[in-house]
Length: 115
Length: 116
Image 1 (tube, rainbow over the protein chains, first blue to last red):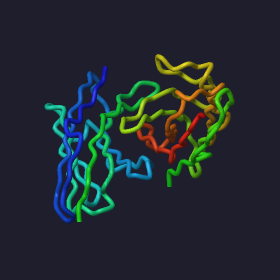
Image 2 (spheres, rainbow over the protein chains, first blue to last red):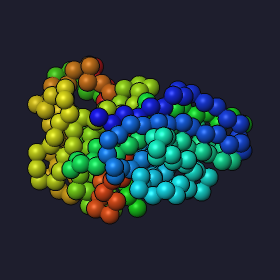
Image 3 (cartoon, each protein chain N blue to C red):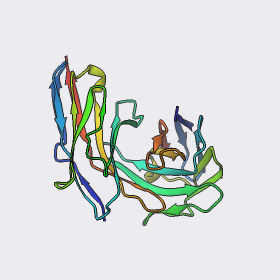
């Protein structure tokens, strides 16, 4: 069974600074995908970044980047130049293939960006 | 691109009535749609997976007769909560997956259901 662990229930960061959210996972699959989704107060789930496990290069999307350590099964998210609009719940997610391709969610990290 | 809508955004109903929630992929064809339930301050719990034209696959513990799912077209899936009770009150979210990035799901804005 696949599992995702986010050990930081809540974090805060000052506006314009950098913050890193941690995530570890477990899977027996060789090919899989990892995601970070954010859920702001509006509760709309938004895709932040995706990483294909067979790619060694870390994914980046503007101010968001990941540190993907496949051997350690670690997938952290770095947010640079934090903005007030980054305040949200962040979920680390794994997709493990199979015919249905279900997503397994971590419990989330609540990030507050302070002015 | 990859926009998913849900309707209604919130609904209040009396105990014993049925409620239908629609999930639409607006700019792509969704071969697979997913229905989740989210309790306050918790993560998403997958309820069922539906493929167009076939029966939905329900997760363990989810009553298929209570949560009816229909995926009649490549852009529409519906979730009907039958004979709703107060314990069914929750936030329901759908997601859709297209053909071009089959591992990525795009989420609707969610529906808040309150059963009185």
